Image (tube, rainbow over all chains, first blue to last red; front, side, top):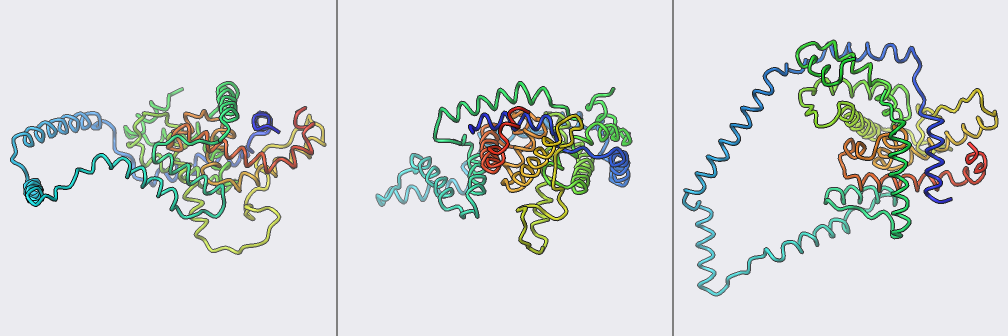
Length: 175
Length: 201
């Protein structure tokens, strides 16, 4: 059976057979229990001061930024900067001036990413490994490829979106 | 009826009792969300209630960039993850079971299968499918299960799932794809045996 057929049938079945619902008595005490705990919980601070403090914080941050910029622009080089400059001059005089590594940095970062992926502890099963890899890809801001067969993947994702928009979103009732 | 924002303003203004309105509004959705994860009614109750209490405690930190429900679901999903971590740390007897991934306290069937108007043979087939689907869901890796529960059981749009899970929509799609593939493989024997019934249903 194709993935799309399976998904359509599964969704149709889930629409007719949703998750179980707790009994009335179960629900009746639910709110009371939460509120009993809420009454013993420290209350969140009143919001009245909040917008004003946020404005003050924003103004303060902006002022600090301007001040820092002004100071930096007029400031003599720091101790460390002077030290680096001196070291650089020493290296230049002995003809050992190193090249700036900026050009290689991107490649190195990519290599490190690949090494992280390659050297990751092998998970117990393939699914867990895929799960971890997807998380890692997400952390690296990479869009994952979920199938080597582009056409099948595209078709499936389109189906998923159509189902999402037409069927599932329309049946979404939060309470 | 007051909006979520109005209730939150009132609670933050000092009227904590109005929080009950939010609890009443989202209790079922919150419970069902946790139930889809943990597969046990009592645990789902504790987890979802913890979620509400945590949301109350940190209500001032709620930035209102998303809906209150989305924020609450995110808290509950994190509570579920913590629940599994705690459970994994607890020493337990390992028994050979016919239902892998199924704890003694877990409900064997998570879905409504009763259909008074339906054919009794359908009820039996539905019960069998519900049981198999529940077991298959329990074996899914955590993120795949999260995406599946939120999207397919909770009916949440992909954008909201990505917000709740804190990842990109592409990653959610990948988790869903993997989850559905796993379920398709697990349910294949069932589907091939009952395909006519399932199709006709």
